[in-house]
Amino acid sequence: MLRALSIKDFVIVDRLELEFEGGFTVLTGETGAGKSILVDALALVLGERADSIVVRQGAERAEIAAEFEIDDTQALARWLQAHELTGDEGVCLLRRVIDAGGRSRAFVNGSAVTLAQLREAGEFLVDIHGQHEHQSLLRPAAQRELLDAFGALEDTAARTAELHRAWQQRRAQRIAFETDSAAIDAERERLQWQVKELDALGVTAESWQALLAEHRRGSKYRLVKLDVAGNKVAKDAFIYDRRRKQVGTVTSAVWSPAAKANIALASIERPAGNVGDELWAEIYYQKELKWSRLMAKCCVVDGAFYNPTRRRATPAPAAE
Image (cartoon, rainbow, N blue to C red; front, side):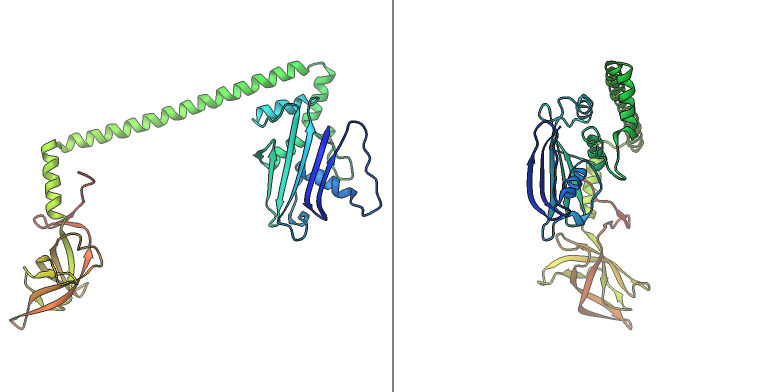
């Protein structure tokens, strides 16, 4: 039974609170008095589709709530329990919110639900008889209930539904166990492959420490572009930061046609030496068989770690 209906900012209604008692209730009024608005509001809280035109002009949202007594509606009580939507005993509270943008939210006993779930719950509670409106006799679930009632099979149907829910839960658990088992097997294979790769490398504690030491030695080398176009640059040039503090030394340099600049391998102390850092080099360069000295602008173009003995980039150690 519908116990109460609350409407706020719906069509032309600012706020309305209605409470119903047992028995037959009739709403009367002249044409245009708003009788159909109450029916439309009840239809929306039962799961009918809506858009922003139902929101009262100037309001942010329309809200409709309906409270039902469900002591005599055991089918709904079982549905609420199956969907974990139970509330106060013997009561079901439906609520619908439509904002001015057309977005809609639905709630059953305070829990957010989909519109389909709200409509399914509403079908247990109310029939709206009218032109182009739904009736419970057209619903397969209602037809099954009538057939079970005619055959005095309500208890058997309830027990069957309970067993079916238990079977579904066990089936979901089995699928989850199988999925977890497959994931564990995949992780085991991955770890076994990693162990095999490590065994093939033959890494020991001593060799790992030696590798870390090599990375520390090579971590200060960077590629530097020197602005001494087309001229041979001598090694052992000095690298300075903007404060004219020496931060490194050019260990080798070569002319790069692609870069149209001298690309030098420079030993640059941290924290200087990040990609894009502008530095200065006090270098000697050869032009027409004559060596000259100048302060040339340079820029770090590669932040990889370089091993000057192997003349190739090597990855940085993850952690010591």
